Image 1 (cartoon, rainbow over the protein chains, first blue to last red):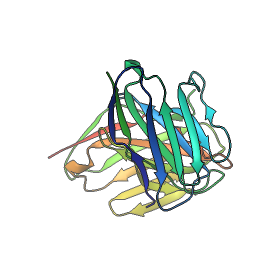
Image 2: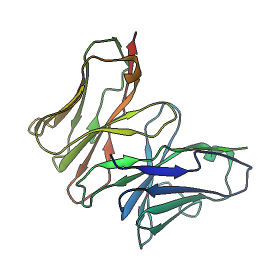
Image 3: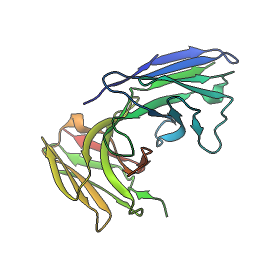
Image 4: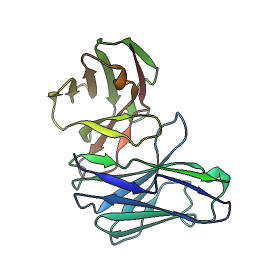
Length: 117
Length: 111
C-alpha cells in the first residue's frame, strides 16, 4: 500500500515553545491531508483538514492560531503547535487519501507523540 | 444517533478462532468502506478497502459490505496473538475524503 510518513515520531518540548510536525505522502500526491489527535485508549479526533494551496479547515473547538497547518506541496503538510502547554501532550496522527472526492484508500502516518513538560 | 456505530466492547478469542467485527451506519451517502488495525502507540494501518456490496477477501481477512442494510463486517480467520489490536471501521461519501469512524474494537487473541 501507499506510505505516509511523519517526523518526528517522538518529541519532548518545554512549555511555551513551538513544535512542528511533518506529514509526507511518499509515493502519491495528496491535495488533502487530515490531522488527528488521540488520547490513550480513545478514538481519533479530527482536528483539521489540510488543503494544498488554500487555508486549512479546522474542526469546531480547535484553535487555529494554536495549531498552525501549512500544506506546502502535494506531498507535505505540517502542523505547528504554538506555545505548547502540558495539556497539548498527545499523539498526533495525519492521514492522506490516495484519491479525490472520497474515492480511494486513505493511509495514516505512524503518529507523533508530543510531550510538553 | 452517531453516523457510525461500532460496539467498542473488548473481544477476547482463543488463537485460531474466527474474529467477527461489525459496524452499522446511518448515512446512505457513504460509499467507500475501510477497516484499520491500530496497535498501541502506532498509527492505524489499512487492512481492507471496499466500495461495493459483497465480500472481499485478502489472506485471512474478509470484508463484507451490505449497503441495503447499512452494515459492514470484518472477519479474521485463524486468528493469531499478533492480531491483538484495536480495529476501526471507517467510511467516506462520494465527494468527501473526510472519514467517519466507529469507536473501535479492542481484540485480544489468547495463545
